[in-house]
Image (cartoon, rainbow, N blue to C red; front, side, top):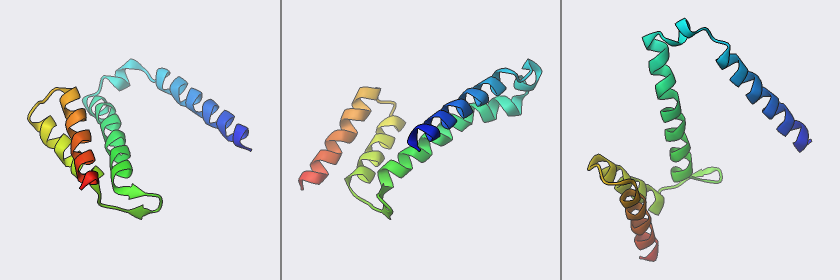
Length: 99
């Protein structure tokens, strides 16, 4: 049953990609379409981060990950380099879990 789901998902992804490539260029050049296409990946990534940070199993939690995310947001707002953001957030999460 798992392999059927994997094959169906793969075929669906391929067809979706093919449909995207089949869209005429004049449709993609519209400003609204371009803006939506730019914002969809950002929204999906934000949703993924929120799910990973604020949930454990079926429960909502507020733990060291939330504080680490806050530190990462502040460092990003200060335009810190990516590695500084990652290591800063990891260090804060580790320190909070240590305490």
